[in-house]
Figure (cartoon, rainbow, N blue to C red):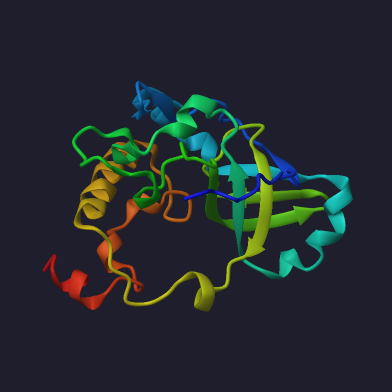
Length: 206
């Protein structure tokens, strides 16, 4: 079958400024690796960060401050080109997790290394957005911003793979020394209690 799809260019609309400047998850030996030391040493630095919007896109921010949460899409710029060829990884770089296809994970190493995070918008000052909960390191290019709208972004009766619950528990244990609040650390709460999760999966833990 011939692939007639074209290549497309993505232009950054801004950049992340953060005290965190090292990758927590990185490409290693045809997989991803979790750097636990980096995760613990700079985890607190991911609590708050700034997004500086390019001047040509300032008008695009009009009205953004009316929302409490926004969705940030960014390009994991430190992913090497050869890493974009891998098809499967251990989720979160944890070898105890079953190896899965890239599209079944939230790995930063992807064919097109675009990631997204929903963050709390603390304030806007001109071209600068101060946010909480963004898991992007310093100088990460931002490619798009959207408001978080629950009836679009938070569907009900969600079912997750069983291994995802085990992964969330592992990440909760890993991040517990950081003493972050719930808005800064999504792993700090029991994911089965989230109102979006299917009642069947909520009951399965009881």
